[in-house]
Image 1: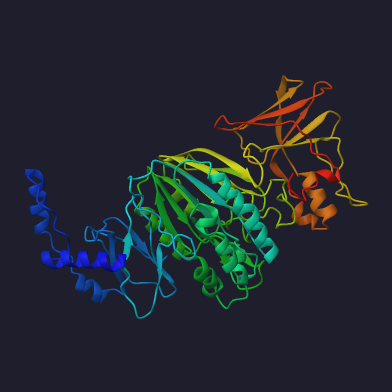
Image 2: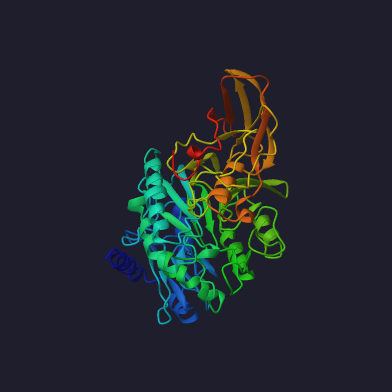
Amino acid sequence: MQMATAMILFLLVLACNGKNKVEEAPDESPDQEQEQEQEQEEQPLDFAAIQAAYDTYGFVLDTAGHPLEGVVVSDGFSSSRTGKEGIYWFNRHANAYYVHYSVPENCRVPVDKTTGLPAFFQQLKSATKRYDFILKPMEHGVETTFTLVCIADPQVKTVANTNRFKNETVVDVRQHLSGIDGPKYGVVLGDIIFDVPSLFPDIRSAMHVNKTGVPLFQAIGNHDHLFGAANEIESQRNFERQLGPLNYSFNRGNAHIVVMDNVLHLLGSASTYNAGFTAEQFTWLQNDLSFVSKDKLLLFCVHIPFKIGSVSGGSTVNRNAYYTEVLNLLAEFQEAHIMVGHTHDNSNYIHTVKGKQIYEHVHGTACGAWWNSTIAKDGTPNGYAIYTVDGSTITNWYYKPTRYSKDFQIRLYRGTDVFTGGHASKSWQFIAHNAKQIIANVWNSDPDWVVKVYEDNTLTGVMSPYTDSDCWAVAYHVGNKGLSETTYDKAMDHFYHYTLTGNPQKVEIEAIDRFGNKYYQSAFCSPSAADYPDQYD
């Protein structure tokens, strides 16, 4: 009804004007009168010619029927920006499934009443050429700040997994965000399911805005593809049908957020895929970013990390699959961040491209180590990340552990402890295992963090960063659960070691992040079964 009413109003304006443009009310200002005369002398847009020449077109209007200028509309291959008449047009790609618009910063994110997910798209139909969109303007203007939540890899394989996601992740997200003022948006960074397409409807229902408290945009992961499909298009169609477009963007505040598919399907089992982008995708990204002011904050959301790149395979973006080209595009912006998941561990990687730093956030996962515990394989708790966006920069971020306080950012160990997970013959010990050595796993740290040590309330030194595996996590997953050591024993660079100067009764760690936030830990995690990550403390 809203669409029909707005279109009637707009078409009445067109009919009264006699041209395919809206005539503005006269103004007494001589300068504005001159501008109006110049506009009237312009060649009017020939909508009939557009209808004859293109197979996809339409109007973008506000709820009052006024045309919206500057809205980018796309099929994921081509993009068109509306002029003052609010009209877009292009010839759709043969493989396009949706037509969608990049939500402008001054309009609300529409949410589907049934799915509870962002609804900024319409399914393309062969017999239909015209697709109109009605956008609702922001009631109080463009947001200056907002909160972004990034959730990586729910990766449900069973109904039990889905129930854990509902009862643990979703409940935690809603509760935590309820304590944060202002607008909130979210992106799920792929691997929604774990090769079981029948679970899509149930987890889609779990992500309803009424349950999470935040509209969640979706990225596709490798396990969301239908491996074994005849071709790349068929492998991704089920995701599209369930959750929406693959390559799209939206705007909030002074930030432009891009979401893309960077899984290159090799038409085999779930393990046969590369990472990167096709020529068509890169062209789409170039076009999308061409409409965006370079002083905006750019957030680039995909599933598989870039990091140092790889020659082939799906661990990181392949260097021959537009690795450098995409990074170069991101470096054109004043500030750019890459948001990814996939690896089931947490790390922060800083690219330097053309003298500019691009921060890549490799998120710990909602499912942790594939729902086998309450942690990921590197000891990072199951969880998600929270970002505060203010203007064209991110002013704060932290990793939010599921069912723990946001202040829980450190796990502390003694170097002399030996971890077995209950295994009869296998054991694991940290590299820094001399007497009086302590180890801190500070999973969301980066080079700007400082980790201090207090012995009996006296500052005695600063911990040194180093690379190690979380032996407590490895021992539980491999020694206790019988899982693959190749998969679950992974060295990471977010560990710190220190040799105590005395024999203190109390040891406390203070970790200070790049924003000045301080986190503390004084409890040591032991090899005891009481400390196993089989349940939340």
